[in-house]
Image (cartoon, rainbow, N blue to C red; front, side, top):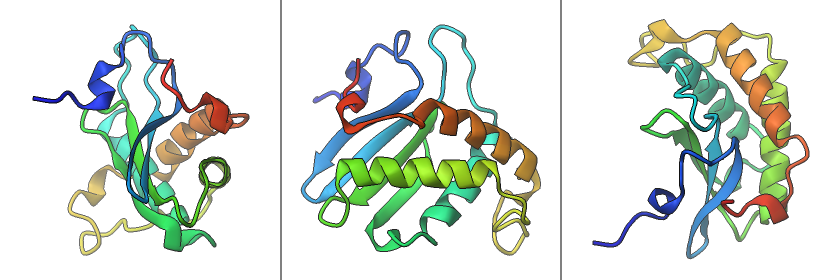
Length: 153
């Protein structure tokens, strides 16, 4: 059986950052890594869920929203995947979009999007404060990221 590309990366050495995971025709997948190597630090369920609600909402309300295919958490709780239409965004433009929305999420001061029982099946563990904190951390990680840095190290 063919190994998934991200399984070939040594997760003991992979630094937090933004990586090109794969290209499938016009769909590009970015791997947004948050976990620090060898620490065992995973994002908590609340951090992941809160960041996901903020970032997914901001991406889908951005001027580039038609290029956004998916944003969601990794099951291993080490980061997120961002899928976009490469006919509408270059890698550099996608990086700039992520930089912009993570910075906006870090400063977000409204109500948590999708925070009611009717909107979310696990609404009880959402926190704007936790979402802002984890988004501020990652905004700092990718603030100066470039397309040349997208390759797994």
